Amino acid sequence: MEKLRLSAEQKKELLRTVRATIERKLELADPIPMPGLNDEIFGQKFGLFVTLTIEDNLRGCIGYVEGVKPIREAVQEMSVQAAFHDPRFYPLTAKEYPGLSVEISILYPVEEVANLEDIAVGRDGLILEKGYRRGLLLPQVATEYGWDRTRFLNETCRKAGLEPFAWENGAKVYKFEAEVFNETDTGLK
Image 1 (cartoon, rainbow, N blue to C red):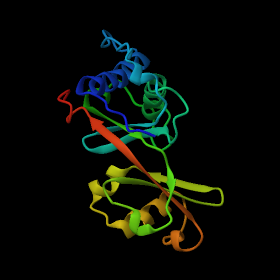
Image 2 (cartoon, helix red, strand yellow; image 1 turned 90 degrees about the vertical axis):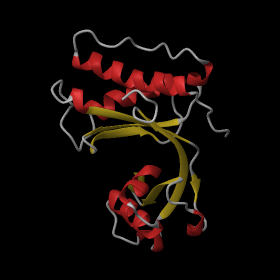
Image 3 (cartoon, rainbow, N blue to C red; image 1 turned 60 degrees about the vertical axis):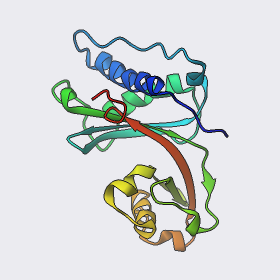
């Protein structure tokens, strides 16, 4: 599958959509206008995650691993899920909203890893599964924490609820690339 070629303005539209969606759900007075997302590119189906932070601390992160819905639908749905339904957090409040920062990750197709040396920290996200357990970490997580490949694999095991080094003991490892952008990168914040 070919990678998306989002323009700076298209990235801003997606980020504004996250904000507009959350503002409407919070029933804030005078919410920002909802972007139309009319460009043809927004009709394509890609995996998509919305990550919310407050003061550089995770506040919600949920998404689709695969392209099950067009981007224009997935971004709105995942905005609501990340803000109000991430089981790790209480629902976002209007009081917290002003400190919120938004990041979007558009995922490219997942592929099974045959050789662990093929995993590039900073480029690849990981999915690790064994039995009914499955964990996913986006590519930027390893970079943010300064992890090497082994630590990244072990932290993905932990996310799946598995013991460290499960990737050496029968767990399947998958990788994917993502286009990641946020409000700071695009000049919105």
